[in-house]
Image (cartoon, rainbow, N blue to C red):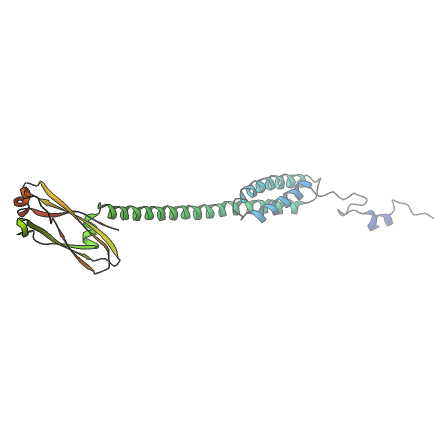
Length: 243
């Protein structure tokens, strides 16, 4: 005798039952939105810490978040499976977005620091270049005289020379007070009592070693009409340069 399909025995047949426990029912499929959310969440998480690329990762994370929420809603309505996938996708999306924001803030701070350091280095190099240029052109005379060279100006002398000529000279001694070999150029003026310039001369010491001294004589030829003024003149250093 054949068994009635609606008999209790058929209800106990495992093959005739679904995963949901309802006899004869077809198992619901997983939510495609939840799966997509999980996949995009994984991609976003894997690339969220990479510089520049994580800009795209943030967009992917937003899409994964939207898909995860949509998938969770569809599962909640009972038409699909995949609640865990949707939740996992949402979590990965949120974590990825947070990582992107955090790493970009970190990279931005590091970039700002590098830019600031580069600008500071450039400013320092420019300042050093300007200082060197000033020392070479005489614009930093006081600094050069204070740190690099000692200039001693002696007394102006006038003597009767041979053949009725007059010999004149002003002794000048230069000493390199720096710790490097350098060339010095000193501009000296003879200034009258009224502040006018009577004459000027230049002294140049090439490749003077640290501590080394060199003697010079300037104003060795003075026109007769200036002799009296030169004897009463004050001798001043107008410019001192080093290179």
